[in-house]
Length: 470
Ligand SMILES: C[S@@+](CC[C@H](N)C(=O)[O-])C[C@H]1O[C@@H](n2cnc3c(N)ncnc32)[C@H](O)[C@@H]1O
Image 1 (tube, protein in one colour):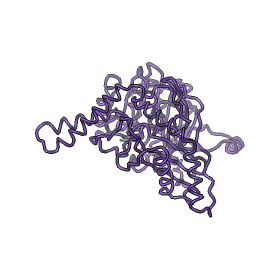
Image 2: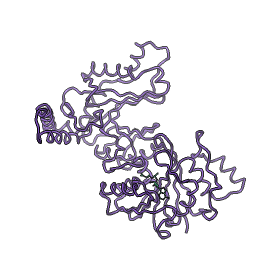
Image 3: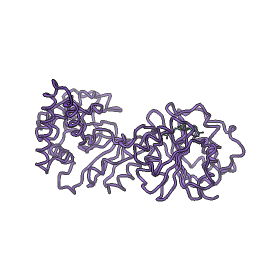
C-alpha cells in the first residue's frame, strides 16, 4: 500500500474532513498536490501524491492528515463468532501482509526527514540525548538553565509527530528520531454494527500484540513515536498514522478563532476571489473568513464590518498576528446600513449569526431582507455573494431570492429539485410576513449552488449567488 521509493515516489495519504467538506478536500488535493487515485468516503478523502510533505501539511480544507496504511472492505464478523475467530479475522484484515507495515515505517521515517540522511539523523539523536540529559541534570539547578532547557525542547518540537498530548509542548520526545524499534500506541474508532460485535480494547489488543510480536515494535501508551489510528465502520476499514501533531485545521496564523477555519476557507474558495478584488465581510466577527481568504489570495484586499467593538478589537489583533495589516481593514458599521457606495465591492462573504456560539439577540429573520438588499447594492455586477446560514434562515433566503412563480411552475420545480435546506429535525420556518416590502424583490442575485455542511454540533448551509445586472 505504501510506496518507499525515492523523493519523487507516490505516497498514499488520507485526510479526515467535516461532513460536507469532502468535495473541497478533493478539489484542493487535485489542484495543489496533483493528487490522483482519489477516493471519497464519508468524512474522509484518500489520495496519492508525490508532492513534498511540506505542501501536503498546508492543506486548508482537511481536519487531520494520515499516512495510509491500509484500506479494506468492512470486517465480516458474525454475532456468534467466538473470541479466537474474532481475533483471527481482525489479525488477517488489519495486519495482512507484514511487508506493508515495514514499508510504512520506512515511509514514515522518511517523511520525518530522517531516513536517507544519516548525518542529520545522528545529529538529531545527539540533540535528543542532550535534551534528555539536561532534563535530568537541570532539575536541581536554578537561574537561567531551566529556561534554556525549555527552549531547546521547544525547538525540538518543530518536527511534526503525533505525541498523543497536544497540550504538553515542552515534553521531550523519547527516541523520536533515532532508528531503534518504533514505539507506538493504537487509537481505534468503531462505529455502526462493528461496534456491537467488537470493543476498541479487543481491536487494540490484537493489533498491538501482533505488531510487537511480529515486527518488534514497542507499545508505549504515554509517549509513542506513532499512533496507529484505526477506523472500523460499516462501509470501510481504514488504518493510518497521523502525520502532524496538531490537526491541520489549527491555524498557526490565527490568534483568536471564530468560525471553523476549514469552513471559512471553503467560503473564500466558493467565492472564486480574483486578483485585485475587494472582498467584504459585513459581519466579520474576529475576521476568520477574510484571513483565510487573504492567506490564499495574496493580490486581493479585504474589508470587514461589525457592530461589536470587542469583535473588531480581536479582528485587529488577528490581522496584526497574521501580518495582513496592509491588505485588510475593519470598520464599525451595521450590515443593514453599510457606509459603502453602490457596486463598490467584487465579493461579499458572510457568516450570519446563528447557533449557540454566534447567535444574537437581534431577530436575524427580520433583518435578513435588509442585509441582503445592502449586500446586493454594494456588490458590482458579476460579483459573487457567499453566505453561511442556518437551515431555518436558508428557507427564508430561498423565499426572498426566488422570483415569484405561477402555481404550476412552482409545483414542477419542487418535484425536481432536492431541497438541501430541509431536515427532519429542523425547527419552525421563520415567518415571511416579517419581510419589508421595500426590500423585495432581490432579482439581480442569481443562485449558483447550495450545500450543507457540519459545523460540529449543528449544520450550516453555504449558498452562492452572482449579481447578474444593476
Ligand atoms: C456569526 S458571527 C461572525 C463570526 C465570524 N465569521 C468569525 O469567524 O469570527 C456574526 C457577527 O455579526 C455581528 N453582527 C450582528 N449584527 C450585526 C449587524 N447588524 N451589523 C454588523 N455586524 C453584526 C456580530 O457582532 C458577530 O460578530
